[in-house]
Length: 199
Image (cartoon, rainbow, N blue to C red; front, top):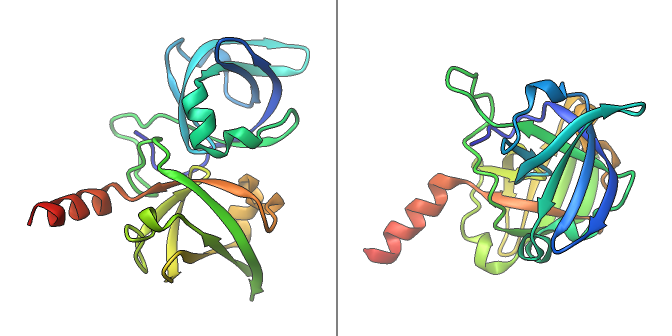
């Protein structure tokens, strides 16, 4: 489980296609504090650490990514040198500053517009209709692993505002119209909708 509060922006150092996709991600995390088999949310995708270490470029960890995950997420757009939002798994007693995030991406949203509003920026996203019904005004979503509050909702679009701090400490400062982002709907919304299906 995660909170959607990004704690590091890593860099994709290498991508290697084996049976699965192996990614090496440079990080500020201490590799000695990362257990093999640990979960790290990478742009919102819960991925398992299969190796870690340090070299002359700094600390790094490796993850294996299945073809299913690549096909269903924005990982398909990853390239060497790209920044990646990172979050370590939640520990008992940690502050829950965002909302409960599983790291199981539901789909891909596309940035369709960006507009400055005061010091903040309004990002508008197009979302698959099947997922749009789970997104509510003032509800929570995780976008590329970042816990954000929804401001406006349409049939297949929604908007969020990002403050300068968020854009500085995540990859959002480099986002542009047309980008694909990983979308995870709020767990509560998922279960409420499921209960309604049975009503």
